[in-house]
Amino acid sequence: MASGALVATSATITGDITATSGTFTGTVNANAGTFSSTVYVGATSNRIVIDGTNKLLKSESYVASTSGWAINGNGTIDFRGGNIAGWTITASALHNATGTIDGTTYTTTGLVLGSTGFIATPKFRVTTGGILYAVEANISGAITATSGSFTGTINASGGVFTGNVTAGTSKFGVDVSSSNDGI
Image (cartoon, rainbow, N blue to C red; front, side, top):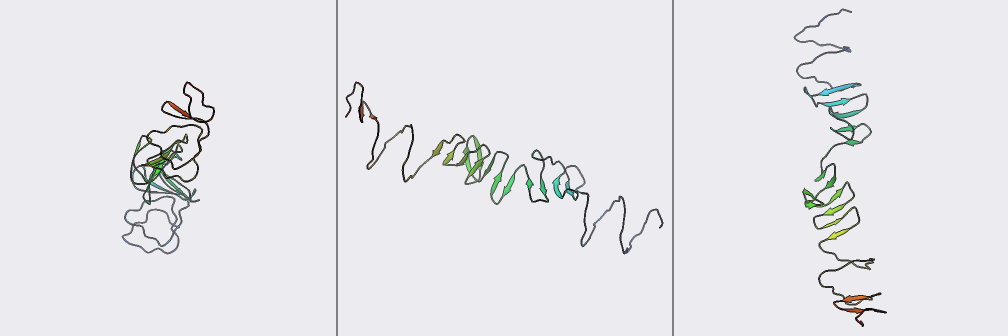
């Protein structure tokens, strides 16, 4: 076996080519192949890395859960954000919404699932503390609450109150006690 440089304007080689390093200029064409170590795509920093050892496709700047992105051979992904089928993924929300919700402006239409636990649309939300906000509600069945208040008009076709009800200066209910006699 001879050593030294092979210089040719064209060549046909059959069998294996083994080298510890090398540089190709132009296009490399192959029908198949295996990379068992690391291949870099791109000529400058923040290249795409194909990591054959760890079965990982990633950005060169990738640091797990911190920066860059990765697609693992086990099927998991790690991205800082992006868009999938109309949904926007950020560090704080998965959303398809319009408007300002919990102090953040969203620029698409639909639903927001916040990383802090809130669920919201432009006209409806539930905070992490369990507070429900809605522009309208159509509720069938019972509403049970230990306290609360209403503003505006309350209309009902029937119902039962237990305890005392105050309307203006009058009180209604069982055992009403105050300077008003109640009804």
